[in-house]
Amino acid sequence: MKITKENKREEKQSYQQTIESRNRNELEGVVHKTARGMWTIFPGLCKGCGLCIEKCPVGVIGWSSELGAYGTNRVEVNEDGCVTCKICSLYCPDAAISVVRI
Image (cartoon, rainbow, N blue to C red; front, side, top):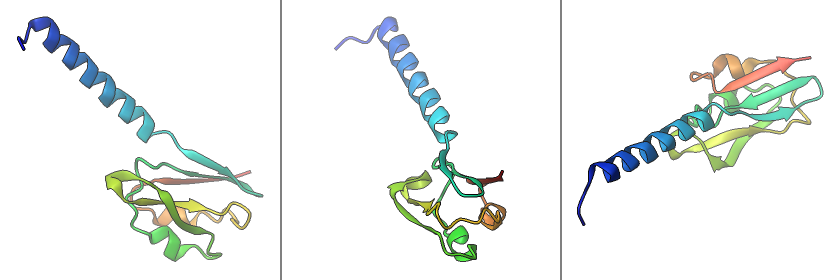
């Protein structure tokens, strides 16, 4: 197969589009509405360290079957029991959790 400048250009554009798409997806959060506010996880930032699970005072954060950053399991919340105390977001070393009270 002969490689031409046009083929290289198309390949480079395809690669750039893939990277841009991946970067957008990393910043999209999965929002859970709770009784007192909203709990959001950003899967592209969650490395699965589990600090939020350990620190949650009501034990409503657990492992998700979906993968986050680095191919590790990310966390999810049982929104029915979340009291929006924000402790999980304070202990998250990667700012992968956002909790908003309303």
